[in-house]
Length: 169
Length: 358
Image (cartoon, rainbow over all chains, first blue to last red):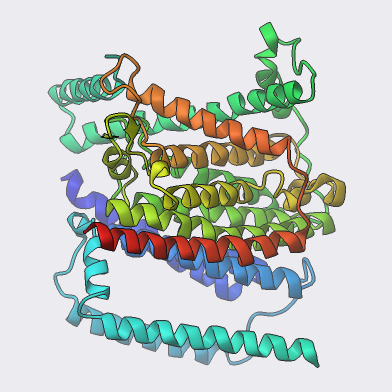
């Protein structure tokens, strides 16, 4: 019995935390607090991946989003914002329509996901996934995988180009 | 002889059998067992920094021809305990200009991941808390959260020194994380697993009957990987010669300037826990974990593991009292123009070696 409801309770708690943190991200007046809440929300999302048995994706989520992208984002906020300037409103007069639109999109996604992922449930037994992900990336998916790395390379070269141009002028 | 792994697993099996016989479901028995294990691990990880602080003070004293702490207990061994009591009773100051929530949360966010990171560390044969298949990546991923605590401390204190320390810390840790992760990739390529226990177990055996099959003894590849891992680990733990986030002659104390009492102690706990974690990782990845020189000898594997770990911890302490601090731009230059290309080249060497071997 305890085996059955324990994952549901954990999933419910984590989802509630995720939704709460996401609300903080869009409503917090201090940009830095919002970014911290976003980092926490991404960490909770990693927990949801772990609950599904996708251990490599969970670790990658933490490593890349929380440990990489969010830190760069916080770094930019620290360099560009005045400390404790928390008087900016985070919404304009259109917030009601935006909220309604988001709600509609959420409902549509829920309906679609319920149709597609019917019967998919927590499966911690799927856990050691890194070997199969590696085989997939260097086997069937090798062309998209390499194409994505080329796109990243182009983005890097572009960033270097713009960075250099600014310095010269 | 004296192996802790089999004894502990037998003890936990007995405990869960006894609990189940008294009407607790199997899941409940599992939770009780895991709670005891987690409690023991957290207690052990919180005690290690106390030992390391004492070791640091003694090592620094001997390197400078002093005696170090001598008054509290024989040879001053209770000095850290006295310091801890002092820190507990200090006033908890929260500056007026600070962001209260971030200021209070920052030490916790910096300290909590340090405990989680010890979950996949193999302390000996059969002494791994959880044998995670993604062990190495898990440690890198979870330890990255500490940087967010450093940034929260830098921003939340409302102080320019804290802010500068936080910015420097973020830039340094994000930069050195890359060569640190890449330096481990050759190890993963050679042993074909990310589980720390699997890597440590794969390094048992001897070449020509005497040289242990540890990764450090693979010609060229092993030594380059270990050197890059060691240098990047020293930078990741913000220790001299890479301590510019808290450089006391430039920034008062960097990101933890405004912290006092136990909150300050938590930052130190995190730093020393990470020193121990990096050493334990190096012992498992490059020095064969619990593998001893004499196979089946009288010294148990957990003692071998702790011995190797503390030997590498001594390297960390030695560096701190030997090298001067690097300048900020030199630090970045060293990471991006020296460590990163060599770690990439090392991955290429390792790929070539694996290709030739198969």
